[in-house]
Length: 225
Image (spheres, helix red, strand yellow):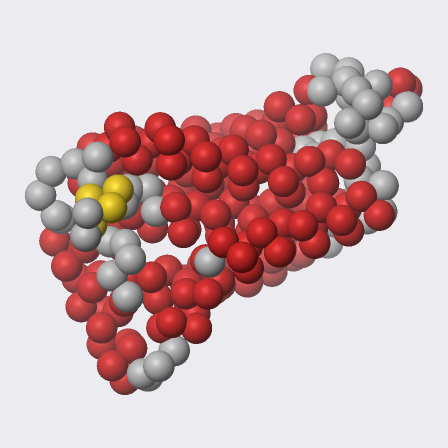
């Protein structure tokens, strides 16, 4: 990986935009959470109807598409990302690959879901844990692409990565909505929470001094704010 500031997850030019994105995402999580804490919004009924039409026209693919949100597949991807990052001497990327999704999923399951209290079939549903796990991994991909793409190609590379991630997310979300694992608004909250959480974890990791043994960076490589 060749980056502008290879020891950092977010080069300085990315910090303010990233903070803006994270703040907006957290705002959406809160606003949608307030709206879904009561009766089921009409948009969720429309989401179920749209998913039903798609999977009625193309039967048998909802379950396979939902595998992208299953824990075994996601843990495998996280491990692969961490191993590759370690092999190419990017310890902070390895840490983000593990702790970004872990923090997003754990906080979601133990704090956000109980606070909102929305249920579907007896399970806490908002924000969607399936979506949080998947989008947190895809956010790591996008963030690493944005921070490591060569100047002149950064916008194109980041846009391409983001588009692929949106397509993957859309396919997985349609499946879990069609299978009635979640309401549509659950997936919106899960996506926004995952993006904001991963950006926050990346910012915190960038503040760690390079002499930290887990990072294995020489003292002169440390990020100095």
